[in-house]
Image (tube, rainbow, N blue to C red; front, side):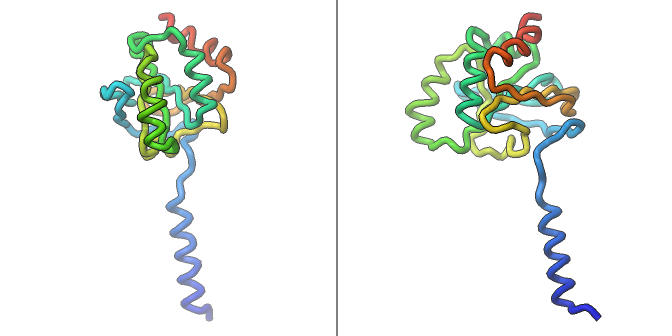
Amino acid sequence: MKSPKLLLFFWLLMVSFSGWASEFAIGDRLPNAQFEDQFANAAVVNNETRWVVFTRSMAGAEVVQEALAGATTAQLSHAHLIYVADISGMPSLIFKLVALPKMQDLGYSIALDKEGEFTKYYPVADGTAALLDLKEMQLTQIRYFDSASALKDALQPLLSH
């Protein structure tokens, strides 16, 4: 006969592992999310969103900033594309004094996840920007870019319509 303590241990172990979630994969449905952009405007990911450019690192943000140079919020919106940045790892003082003023100089909106809660399962590779293709919030393709020119080439057909 097995020890009740041993059974309890294995049951607790299984329960704890079942609560761990991994990042979204192709075929998963992303939940609707509402963010605030650098201008304190609402920015949403919902059924109308077709593409999400996502970053979690400074290197990824630099790739996007260079790739989107000259783009406007209107262009992104018309393409049903949103740029989402997880800035939860950035110290708030640095954000307020350095990053936010630079973001406000850009011609496009950046949806900011300040706590990292909405985007904690968004896929991204270290030092890259991710381009997530969505169809009615279902993830259909994930592409990673460590080069601004490659991301710009991928975004050009989307933004030129």
